[in-house]
Amino acid sequence: MKWLSFAATIALSAVLVTGGSGCKKETQTKEGEGGKKLSVTSPGTVKVKQGDSETFTVKISREKFTDPVTLEFSGLPEKVKVVESDHTIAKDKDEGKFTLKADADAAVVDGKEATVTAKGGGITTEAAKFKVSVTKAK
Image (tube, rainbow, N blue to C red; front, top):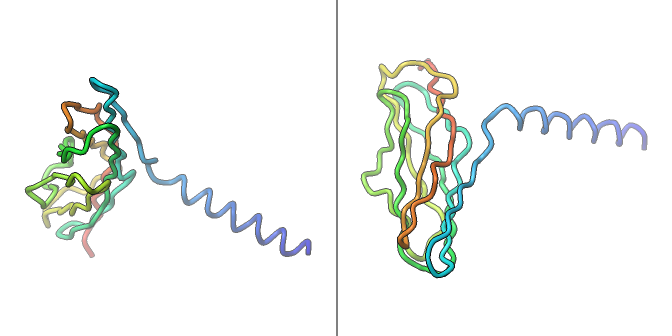
Protein backbone atom coordinates (compact mmCIF):
# COMPACT_ATOMS: atom_id res chain seq x y z
CA MET A 1 0.00 0.00 0.00
CA LYS A 2 2.87 2.37 0.81
CA TRP A 3 4.41 1.67 -2.60
CA LEU A 4 1.14 2.58 -4.35
CA SER A 5 0.92 5.83 -2.39
CA PHE A 6 4.55 6.63 -3.26
CA ALA A 7 3.91 5.91 -6.98
CA ALA A 8 0.80 8.12 -6.96
CA THR A 9 2.78 10.95 -5.35
CA ILE A 10 5.55 10.66 -7.96
CA ALA A 11 3.02 10.64 -10.84
CA LEU A 12 1.21 13.70 -9.46
CA SER A 13 4.51 15.52 -8.99
CA ALA A 14 5.49 14.79 -12.61
CA VAL A 15 2.19 16.18 -13.87
CA LEU A 16 2.52 19.31 -11.76
CA VAL A 17 6.12 19.94 -12.82
CA THR A 18 5.55 19.41 -16.55
CA GLY A 19 2.23 21.26 -16.50
CA GLY A 20 3.96 24.34 -15.11
CA SER A 21 6.45 24.61 -17.98
CA GLY A 22 4.05 26.34 -20.37
CA CYS A 23 2.09 29.55 -20.14
CA LYS A 24 -1.24 29.34 -18.37
CA LYS A 25 -4.35 30.14 -20.31
CA GLU A 26 -5.52 33.66 -19.57
CA THR A 27 -9.15 34.82 -19.54
CA GLN A 28 -10.23 38.42 -20.03
CA THR A 29 -13.85 39.45 -19.41
CA LYS A 30 -15.58 42.70 -20.28
CA GLU A 31 -19.08 43.84 -19.37
CA GLY A 32 -21.24 45.97 -21.62
CA GLU A 33 -24.65 47.63 -21.56
CA GLY A 34 -27.68 45.70 -20.35
CA GLY A 35 -25.65 43.10 -18.47
CA LYS A 36 -23.93 41.79 -21.59
CA LYS A 37 -20.65 40.04 -20.90
CA LEU A 38 -17.92 38.70 -23.19
CA SER A 39 -14.93 36.59 -22.17
CA VAL A 40 -11.98 35.27 -24.19
CA THR A 41 -9.58 32.55 -23.03
CA SER A 42 -6.18 32.32 -24.72
CA PRO A 43 -4.61 29.02 -25.79
CA GLY A 44 -1.81 29.24 -23.19
CA THR A 45 1.27 28.15 -25.14
CA VAL A 46 1.52 27.30 -28.84
CA LYS A 47 4.68 25.65 -30.20
CA VAL A 48 5.37 25.35 -33.90
CA LYS A 49 8.41 24.17 -35.91
CA GLN A 50 9.93 26.30 -38.67
CA GLY A 51 8.05 25.58 -41.91
CA ASP A 52 5.25 23.78 -40.08
CA SER A 53 1.84 24.58 -38.63
CA GLU A 54 0.05 23.89 -35.36
CA THR A 55 -3.65 23.99 -34.50
CA PHE A 56 -4.81 25.73 -31.34
CA THR A 57 -8.13 26.64 -29.69
CA VAL A 58 -9.45 29.93 -28.36
CA LYS A 59 -12.53 29.79 -26.13
CA ILE A 60 -15.12 32.50 -25.59
CA SER A 61 -18.24 32.91 -23.51
CA ARG A 62 -21.14 35.32 -23.98
CA GLU A 63 -23.86 36.44 -21.62
CA LYS A 64 -27.09 38.15 -22.68
CA PHE A 65 -26.24 38.23 -26.40
CA THR A 66 -25.81 35.74 -29.24
CA ASP A 67 -23.91 37.73 -31.87
CA PRO A 68 -20.89 36.19 -33.62
CA VAL A 69 -17.55 37.10 -32.02
CA THR A 70 -14.47 38.13 -33.98
CA LEU A 71 -10.98 37.48 -32.65
CA GLU A 72 -7.93 39.63 -33.32
CA PHE A 73 -4.42 38.23 -32.87
CA SER A 74 -1.39 40.47 -32.32
CA GLY A 75 2.23 40.26 -31.23
CA LEU A 76 3.00 37.07 -33.13
CA PRO A 77 6.68 36.47 -33.99
CA GLU A 78 7.89 37.64 -37.40
CA LYS A 79 7.04 35.24 -40.23
CA VAL A 80 4.41 33.51 -38.07
CA LYS A 81 0.73 34.01 -38.83
CA VAL A 82 -2.76 32.69 -38.21
CA VAL A 83 -3.66 30.97 -41.48
CA GLU A 84 -7.43 31.48 -41.43
CA SER A 85 -8.57 34.79 -42.91
CA ASP A 86 -11.86 34.66 -40.98
CA HIS A 87 -11.38 34.80 -37.22
CA THR A 88 -15.09 34.74 -36.42
CA ILE A 89 -16.69 32.39 -33.91
CA ALA A 90 -20.29 31.71 -34.97
CA LYS A 91 -23.18 32.69 -32.72
CA ASP A 92 -23.88 29.06 -31.76
CA LYS A 93 -20.23 28.18 -30.90
CA ASP A 94 -18.08 28.86 -27.85
CA GLU A 95 -14.66 28.13 -29.32
CA GLY A 96 -12.66 28.51 -32.50
CA LYS A 97 -9.88 26.33 -33.87
CA PHE A 98 -7.11 28.15 -35.69
CA THR A 99 -3.84 27.24 -37.38
CA LEU A 100 -0.55 28.95 -36.63
CA LYS A 101 1.94 28.72 -39.53
CA ALA A 102 5.66 29.48 -39.26
CA ASP A 103 7.61 30.19 -42.44
CA ALA A 104 10.63 27.97 -43.05
CA ASP A 105 12.91 30.94 -42.29
CA ALA A 106 11.03 32.16 -39.19
CA ALA A 107 13.41 32.95 -36.34
CA VAL A 108 13.64 30.46 -33.49
CA VAL A 109 11.92 32.07 -30.48
CA ASP A 110 11.04 30.75 -27.06
CA GLY A 111 7.82 32.01 -25.53
CA LYS A 112 7.19 35.29 -27.34
CA GLU A 113 4.14 36.96 -25.83
CA ALA A 114 1.19 37.35 -28.18
CA THR A 115 -2.41 38.36 -27.50
CA VAL A 116 -5.96 37.63 -28.59
CA THR A 117 -8.85 40.08 -28.27
CA ALA A 118 -12.56 39.31 -28.73
CA LYS A 119 -15.17 41.67 -30.25
CA GLY A 120 -18.91 41.06 -30.34
CA GLY A 121 -22.22 42.33 -28.98
CA GLY A 122 -20.81 45.86 -28.84
CA ILE A 123 -18.06 44.72 -26.46
CA THR A 124 -14.29 44.46 -26.93
CA THR A 125 -12.32 42.51 -24.33
CA GLU A 126 -8.89 43.36 -23.04
CA ALA A 127 -6.13 41.31 -24.69
CA ALA A 128 -5.60 37.81 -23.27
CA LYS A 129 -1.91 36.82 -23.35
CA PHE A 130 -0.39 33.61 -24.65
CA LYS A 131 3.09 32.41 -25.58
CA VAL A 132 4.32 31.38 -29.03
CA SER A 133 7.49 29.35 -29.48
CA VAL A 134 9.12 28.58 -32.83
CA THR A 135 11.48 25.63 -32.80
CA LYS A 136 14.14 24.65 -35.31
CA ALA A 137 13.07 22.38 -38.15
CA LYS A 138 14.82 19.02 -38.14
